[in-house]
Image 1 (cartoon, rainbow, N blue to C red):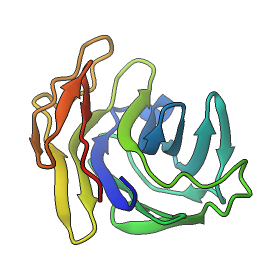
Image 2 (cartoon, rainbow, N blue to C red):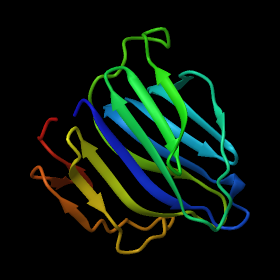
Image 3 (cartoon, helix red, strand yellow):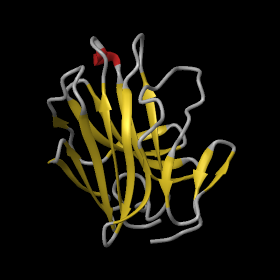
Length: 173
């Protein structure tokens, strides 16, 4: 995939400032863009291996616990726009000054780091140019449960397949 939008809804449980929600885009092996929402801060990182470099500046966000919020990344060329609850919070350009050439294609994912109570997810969605939804998962169980394999229940297009628990497609946008 090259240009697309990835988004999801999330809700942190009470006391969830220790929760970090990560929305991942353009993943290719050991490199990816990571949108991190932690407490009242939103930041975009470029990760290669275990090295993270922040792309642009961070933004302050209001995402109270026990309330559903939407987090979204729009990727077009080397521009990445990041939204919380429909409001543009970051407009980043990976111009090659963050440790290498911009990532131009790759997959998507979710990652959570939490202590105690775990956040909930819903409506994970990938949309390509022309508003064609190629992946939508409303999750059978909306909660992330530590140590439990997630049961994805996707409404998919683009001939998705499952390999080792990972949804993959050979489609390109």
